[in-house]
Image (cartoon, rainbow, N blue to C red; front, side, top):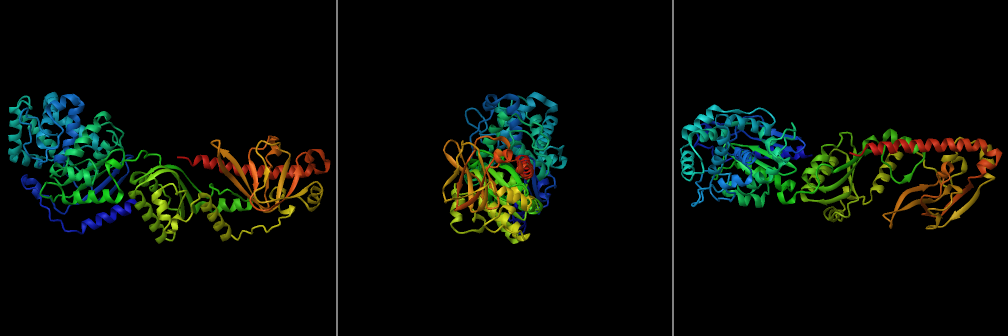
Length: 596
């Protein structure tokens, strides 16, 4: 679903006219193909959505600035770097000479003056090895080897007179500590490093993932410095457009005159867009507009970051394993085992946002003809998550499949939509949805529901008894009737009887958290309850109440041991009970395995 939405966005933008202009103050940049256009979104688990010219190489330019700043922080620490570079937004263009008049400190590391200073600080440590160190560090971010574009480097070096003026002014204030030409040459080279949109997106995802490359697992930046880098990206990364950007889009970002925009949402993802035509402020026209559109559609914003990301999918199973609380006979259970594979259930938890929805939607099986999403353990849902789920519902509907969301009433956004009678919110209770799907399977396979009253011969636990054995057993049974709401068994009471339901329906209840009543199962005619004490003779573990008028055949356990003529009947009853428990155990094992 995420892929479908992003693909549609890419195609929509690709058809638009782009009136931006190529950067011409660096001659080599004016020769690139203005039609190049790529998008890559990378999540913090390394999954990528890639469109268009994602493997076309371009030079990183000013998008290098957050990464060289990170190197300076890692080498010197925050206090030492702040002595040389401030972190205040300048409100000026990227190549402005924005220095504090008293100290000569650059306003921030995202303008040229600040980035040249950061490069010089690294150069002071490594001298002739500096660019190799930078290239290696940037390659760790990207997860693959990066190289220098010699043509662009030469072009920048030949025409970079303004940057030379900035460097000399920095030297005048002793911000640059020694010679100007050598560190400035490294700066020209770092801006001329070649990347692809895919590699740049991984670099951003490394920042989003606390400095660790999500694909290779290698550390590019110590985690304690990542907030410092992202902070200046948020406040200064888009130059004189930074305030409006962080207000409307809400993503720490950095643009470059090579045509790239890199946006990062900490703990979730990064977006890299490559489109060379620039606006008057030196930002990629499509890069700005597309990031803004993606952020709006998916409700991505730095200040909407959810509390939980990785473990949104609590468990995933099908109707081969999942069951409603309505107890069925072994014939029905066999049908669910055979045909339940097309009916899928996902239990979600935590906050629902773009990142969490993207994670679980990636795991939706192509075999899912019907999907039930249980959101009982979800705490919040934002507009971006709802948009994704609604589009998922539309996609299911158009392909003849069904999507249902259950246990949603605590989430105001979903509850509000349920008042509009939307189909995918028809079941408030998860158990109602499962029961509905179970009945679809039974009806599709001509399952014959036992008509009331259900005689002893048709009771599940008495299967394979002969007519003579049924008649013998009947002599020792008592027929009882219970009214709706009447308690038939109380938790903790002595276990003395087993109940075969002739007609009606009972429910089994227990108390959770000391006060909350929970329905554990609903049992219809043809089934029994109280049978577990046949095995362990323990006291009752739950209450049993009549939901309707209930007629039962009631048997004392002890007669199976006391009366000699019932010995063979006891063996058959225990065999049937063993088959039922075996089926439950196998299903329970599958349910345990379904937890992610």
